[in-house]
Length: 364
Image (cartoon, rainbow, N blue to C red; front, top):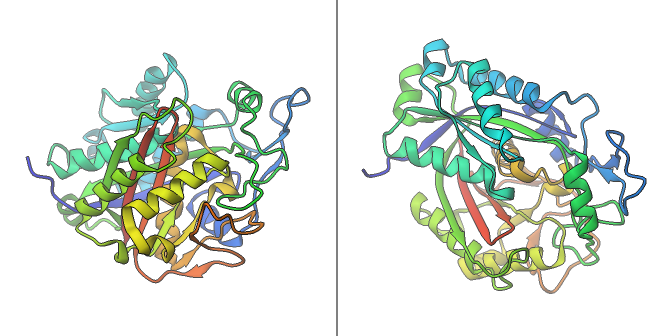
């Protein structure tokens, strides 16, 4: 069946170290103050790095996900019947326990049974959004609830620390000279996606539309991206074609950029490969420099932040900037938020194993 566009975003909720709720995320990214602090949740005395972006009053992940879904559904105005017909797509870290978590979350929130789970590392949530948009676009369902969650915990923290991926200077510096790596952060988010017809029938509020999405692998290396950015460039191209837009239409990129040397340079190469000279002109930042890397939840947290920022008409700064890197010749947003020139934006994510996603949204 042909896909029907666009897909509406009618309700959102998110928490991170910037605070709890959508308003807190927007205020935090526009303030431009990174939320990294010494970790108090567990002992880091044996680690090389001891900071992360954690929310002090975060509860158990299942409870935070339940609150996120309830709040997003309420914001979308979903009644009991509408919830009961909406499937849940959940992105979360873990193995055999995630299906049980997804089933319990669906029951708690009154959603349809048999939820899908996504544990494909840092593209988990963005892949879930792409799948949800495809299901709605093909007319399989009217609406989908996508949820994602990661709260910084000792096991993954230890692995990233042992792998020398964490920034020893306590700052994330995407695309910048002198960048030293990533830092982890809490992220829990939920989004309600609906067909345009279903949203119109309910007279539902529309925050933005998911206009395009793309997914591609490069299979270059288990942990390192293709230096030429070919997989991410294909994902970008697919998202643009699906949306029926040109590179020149895009006014902002919320980059995957984690502050690691290889990854940031490969992403800059992907933008140049996909968009040519426009890659040097489109405003770019990575909000991971503010709220940290939420692993499986990153794609959804960053999508929410992107939508809120473009709707507000101001684009977040790329915190931690020290100076230009010739491997990343991009228009990086520095010093202060920049006015949004268009209502179209792209959120990019990439993961170990060469997985790449691009989500293209248009603000209402």
